[in-house]
Length: 488
Image 1 (cartoon, rainbow, N blue to C red):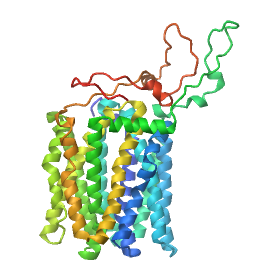
Image 2 (image 1 turned 180 degrees about the vertical axis):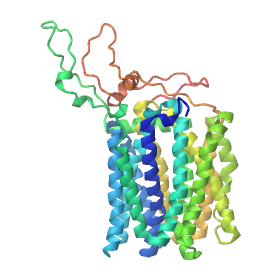
Image 3 (image 1 turned 45 degrees about the horizontal axis):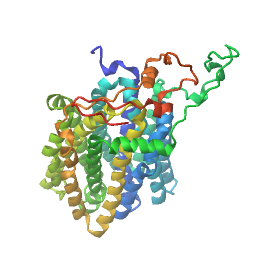
Image 4 (image 1 turned 90 degrees about the vertical axis):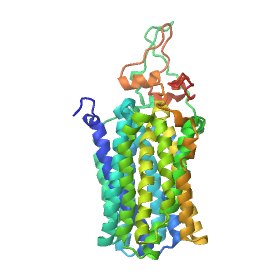
């Protein structure tokens, strides 16, 4: 094992194994939950669309404030509580089914509330990663995590289809609950991160620094609170950071369009496979697992290809070469055409795997530490908001225009989703500008006490950087291509 290997970092191994358990449960549930609605409760296209919409609606409702909240919270605690909430909610489905009281209303509530817990888990896990591995290892770390998610897509969705076939869909959801419970238990081994320092308000009075005073040299200095921006101002700062930067804006637009197209297709696949094609549940799980294979291949190709062409250029070229395969996906009519549609899904997913590694690494590198939570939450709001809108549109259009027309609309969106990145400055970018680390953040990471400038008097207790966001904002500076780094 290399001396600088990620696997020598105990906290990364902890986060990785917990993510593996979460991904297993999430992907089994991805197959089992809509099949519960379609098979056990007789849901149609509109009801399946509503269920898929509710599963991602939380990103629209609380996605933006969640970033500001996570920036103020202990990340380890956020991850554990989110997993426990999801475990309890999923466990209620097989229990209600066993008691004979399962309804679509309960399934809708479970989808909505687990989506809320997922908001906090996803924002927290992406925000904690740079502090665990260092920014120089972000591509390796994200490649490992995206590869793991792809394996989860293959194994979890394949297993989900088989479990539904063997145990029925409600009992398969019990596996999802147990996986999230195991993830929460594993995360208890995660050590405190720099973002988990005690807020300034919690510092005991005995720890307040003293300074010389005209009357007495030992009189304690009264702490002067550092005024911080309100929740609305913090959310606005995250939005400005993402939408005000042409490269981050392009990444957000391409990923959002990709999610919109995917959801237009995925929402109706359970109805198409079960009702129209009369295929077994394992066939649906296998089709979705093919997408996982594509994501795995994309995550493995991302680093060597980007080393040759550059991060931005790789994203643009992958979109130009692979995205048009989205037009093959709607050709799901059984027989050989099903294999052609699967090949299109594989190629589109391969592009998604590369996007997930390079796009996430780009935006993490271009964001300073105190904005990571809000940046990730802004992206999650846009990306999963697109999933919610895609689910609602898919159900509505499926009822009004039919399954086939809606699938072709989804394929057309997938085929053109790469254009915002291709038409942006990212197309010529080899490497992103590195976000400067603020003095306060560097101090928190090193564990050293901050030093007041010469000739000044300490007036307030030191607090972690995230509680002094406005003071820690780095000034713009030149990037690798000679342009100015975006203002934070």
